[in-house]
Length: 131
Image 1 (tube, rainbow, N blue to C red):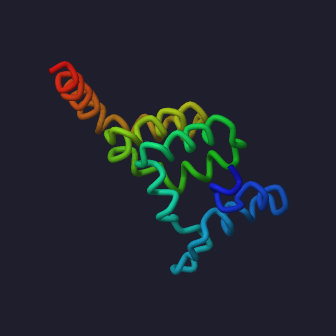
Image 2 (cartoon, helix red, strand yellow):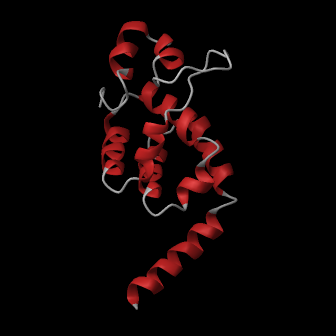
């Protein structure tokens, strides 16, 4: 888990909240806001048929602080695309189960816009598989 997150857990144990800002990714934030930048490597894992299983396991077992950080960086504001993706939606499901009350509320609000599409995609997929 620590290798997948590029040392995030090890550094979190050492530096507590500093890890959230500094070591979440190996990409430097060019805007100098102090917030971590997204890693294309981790972003790709959400949509990969094999690696997504690894992310699901990570969401099941990672410490809450790590879950919150990953959610804020990789999932919040992107649920519309990820929830309808045929692979990433499984990772999103695991992540949602670990959210605190505030993030869960925000996720529900964000998902309200895509729920009809999720349902229609689900019906389309079922029809396709039944043919």
